[in-house]
Length: 205
Image (spheres, rainbow, N blue to C red):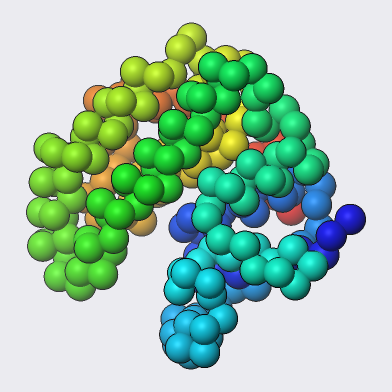
């Protein structure tokens, strides 16, 4: 079995679905959590291939791109997290790319805005525009549920579930449980995710 080290900030963010996937796949790893000054110093030294995290080192080799890491972890230790059915896999991949690319880039400016009132206004504009379009798109992909492709949890549900958790927690100014009210299937997915035995075991570890 390879030796793994996952590097990210000391926060859930984009790395939390990877941490969860590693836990569900029973793959031991070093959870390296950086403060921003340490990240900045390492970035200056060229420690990150594309200048960003999360980064998974596999036997010392640095690999980036969140969706690719999630698929790798699933294939290695928890195949049920990444469907073998081509269409179900397509849905999973589309959600991963929507959230790890489109939504992530949309949110970035507001994450660095320090004025709370302006941050909230920026996010309101996103919900009226591209972020709202992304959420409506994903809402339309979810079938009878409770998860994206049916009864089984997938790596896409780890991303969606963590998104719901962040909205409900109030940790993202301007986004809340009220935001999810417009997307009932997504909200239901978030509830099923929070109650999933694997997720509750991770939270209780």
